[in-house]
Image 1 (cartoon, one colour):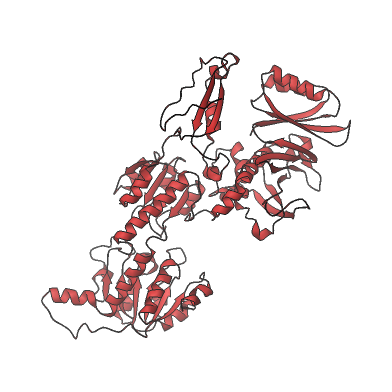
Image 2 (cartoon, rainbow, N blue to C red; image 1 turned 180 degrees about the vertical axis):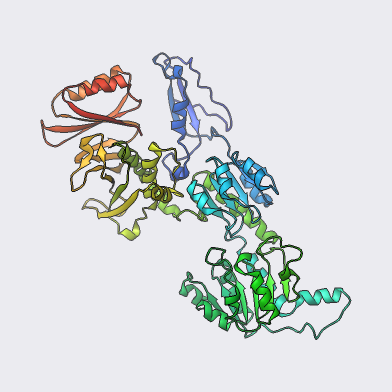
Length: 625
């Protein structure tokens, strides 16, 4: 059958009047439908299409064959909407406009932001916009991505984002050099009184002796926070002939040694430094960390530069330290409140140089940040995990690609397991077992665990689960998840990441007694594997089988005798239910067996009742996938 190509953006008319012999080909965007793009919640195009077909089109009198082919792109999904609340470089906006409707609405009040957010799939902010818990609640579940055009994310409520399954991404690399350069600029301006001398000359004075500075050579600078910006400041300070020490409890010592930096404790850094340059994030632990107690530990006459976050310095304590000479000078690009009040004592102090949060304000950095955050947001809207995700575990693209088929398997096993649970006790204890030829260090299972949680929770709730919030949702619902790894036997190789995945729900009753595993506790157990790139059910309870997990499944426990398969198949055929496969697992001939039947449509209650009425059928259950 020849495919009918359509240009991008054209409509495809699937008319219900099509004759029985009609053959219609729908050309869809070129993509791998089993790729990890649905990890953040993207719906299957094929599933969506099947659900929307008119009944007449599905009828026997007007059956049309629809072949879905990966050929010429056709945009059949609505464009997402991205809200940009603060100025963003044109290069970034151009990237966004290629895939989304972009709403640039600047200087929104909190009320205006909450009113708009329910119409948006993503929002991009800088430092001024506060994305609060109330904003996430007002989004009504539509908001999937928050992009922070910059490094700091203290203006985004990460807890609320995680609860709602909203990915938060930032742009941590594009403005690194710009921020480091600004720190060095303030360092030099501070040492040589550049700002004060400039103002003095412009006012008509000529006071050379008053503005005598200090040299940087052979002075010690303490870099507080040895991340991307801090390490770049350290490199430049070394070039100025300074001795560089650094404090960062999470920095690797070998990275510091590589550029000639000595890592020291917090108090030692304070005691040794002639200059202190702050590059730490604003967290509950660092908020107000430079307070009266801290300033009491510094070398008298120290000079402080802050291009990180304003809240790490207690401004009232800094004023005291400046007035009593503990701190000789300070250069600040950030403040507790931005913009600071006109009568702010720190801003007005004669020994303080101030700039209006210019750390990332270079032409090159602004364009770079715009492109970096646009790429991260676009990728997230496509269902991809960004390397700059703040509230999701980092999973490399190599791991994503390798585990792609297992992701579908993991979710389907979770769905199967929870549907086999009976009673109102709920799911509390879940054990996930991975059988692999690889060592535990070579097998990243976080993504698979998240998808199993998705499969367990979504069918029995209105929750939206993804890699961002899976562990949080499990904890909130009291689901205890343990993971086990078992070595694969002879036939497996390390080329295949997993031989099988098993999901066991303990301390529950089962709708299907054959799904109960042996052992000390009652447990529903299912297992699966990947065969020819597709998810297969390989075990239910103690019964082995080989069932493709495409469509839905009927499980029947019956006496192993001739004619049962034919009877069940005949009843499904009479009910116009198409059977895609059938597999039987048994304990021994003429004893008990479990038959797994794959179906394309959901059988009616009458058909299911008739299957249950077959004398040899002891029990059965219908499972929707």
